[in-house]
Length: 375
Ligand code: KG4
Ligand code: ZN
Image (cartoon, rainbow, N blue to C red; front, top):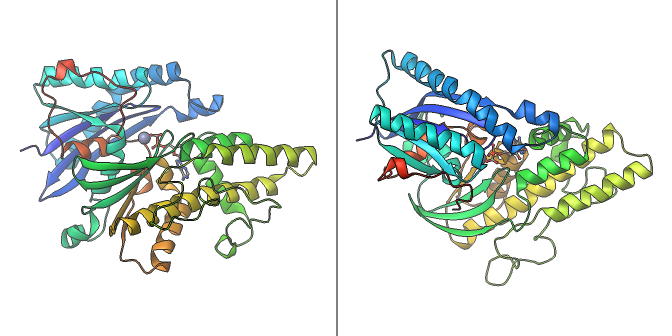
């Protein structure tokens, strides 16, 4: 029985190592260390793959050592691992290779099983980590997702709607046809002259808008234009209960609309701190509107009373607030699961958590990093 797992995550610009323990059916964090090269990437306005890989190489051993040291401290004795879990993909090949090859060596040297985890699935399993939740022992059934469950993954590279029937058993409903939700935040932030990563920067600008945002109807941030809600507003939901556009998303049109508006504001000399805040509010709201509408609609259509969100964009408090509001407004019994913000963005704890529900890799030395791994 696997009780303690070391997770390793190096899919992009974060180097993560975490030790998780499963005890009485509950998955808890003994340590969770993340070293990010995001500040370095911020200087260039985005990720440069070679640079991200080089930073991974520098950080991987110190981060693993620190996670083992902290886990031993948390346990009060030196940590005994039962398995090693690693992100196999998708992601940047140079970054992935650092984690996968390190994990293979450790598995061989320490003679521990290796468990390969899909990064996208890993994000969802942040919802199974219970030790940040109050009263978990008493309410375990209520706080971790129960199947069937609708999953919305919103990250820098992915926007996917998934119907989970069980661990390892899921149906892909739809995803983005172009930019991911996080990518849209990042690209729009760049257009507004805000730093990378764009999601938190846009959220912070939107929050500065003096008008109480709760009282602003969607698309009324005080801007003269309303930004589009792509693949939502043209077609009503079809008679069969599903959206006319299916469960897919598209965010590149929103980015283009922002580009046009920024150009217009600059030419007419109206581009200011205020219009940046207004646009930020509108961008955040447009993205949230689309995600909320489709996710809740999917739960209704498939008669599912559990929704879980995952990925960096799930750290967006407006999105979560709107999801809660929509569920309440429709008087649904749906239970919403949201990881705490630090477990929404890339981390190794989610990778170790997912590994508890997976089989070990038959031949660890044959494991290959796969930058194009899909759901
Ligand atoms: O899951 P993640 O850390 O990495 C990927 O697997 O892609 O997601 C990163 C994305 C970035 O696009 C970032 O701008 C976005 O998540 N993000 C947010 C917030 N925090 C991170 N987007 C909106 N609001 C946030 N608070
Ligand atoms: Zn991710």
